[in-house]
Image (cartoon, one colour):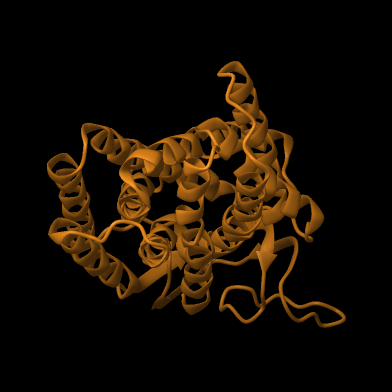
Amino acid sequence: MTRGVALAAVAALAFGVTTPIVAWAGAHGAGPFATAALLYAGAALVAVIARGRGPRLRRGDLPRVVAVAIVGGALAPVLLAWGLQRAGATVGALLLNLEAVFTVMLARALYREPVGGRIALAIAAMVAGGAALVLDASRELALGATWGVLAVAAATACWAADNALTRPLSEREPFAVVAAKGGLGAALSLAAALLAREPVPPLAPALALLACGATGYGLSLRLYLLAQRAIGAGRTGSVFALAPFVGAAVAIALGDRAPGALTAAAAALFAAGVALHATERHHHAHRHAPVDHDHPHRHDDGHHDHVHDPPFAGEHSHPHHHDAVEHDHEHGADLHHDHH
């Protein structure tokens, strides 16, 4: 649990700092489709360069990878870039908290990950925070800003669907997933940019977006997938909700509009939701059925006690067998704990 939370938190920091940079690039000539293409081109590039060892993608994964590329690699960043240009970096960054809400809801609907009273209260707080930001945009900003807020919210819903679709791929080699998603997403966005006849962005914004893609979308996604292995889609999404606060803080430091009363209230509600998510604990007596599978694992995680000759330490991957076992310990909704 601790390792999974730490991985998700670092992924959140890497992604969070990209939001105000994406807003800056949009204000300096980078269109929404070009922005999406450059972000995921950077992600694919770093994934190809830094490919690791582990189970590769399989032919049966192709439909899921294509769906992830369309929803998360093309549609979501386009909506984000378009929305940030109208809502502003601070409001847009805070709205990214809604990704945690949608992710938990989809994880519950698709994988029946547990949602207790504490998580339900966190979701309610975050939904209230999102409503406060919409109200802030409608009262204090122009009509275009309201549409921008709704576009960013739609982007978070797309990324939540991406998170849910990616969960079964979390046992594959993470950079292989990033390379496939990034490459397809960049190609789709580039084709859309050409069809829409978007102008070529200036060099400085283009390089900034490539760098953001490499760190905040490529490396961050790898860490996110590693976190999903440990604590499941819902809890990873909830810890990842730290990212919007990082983005909002950087945006304010760079001179974006000072937050008003409703924006400050939304930040407080989102912070309460993140705190409730991060401190939630789940443990009970449960039974594991016998299973044979292949995925990255360690021998100090309480579930992998098979013997190697010669002995092997650290994370590795190979086909292995689990006998049936019943025990009680704290756990997330990882590969070995998908009981309902």
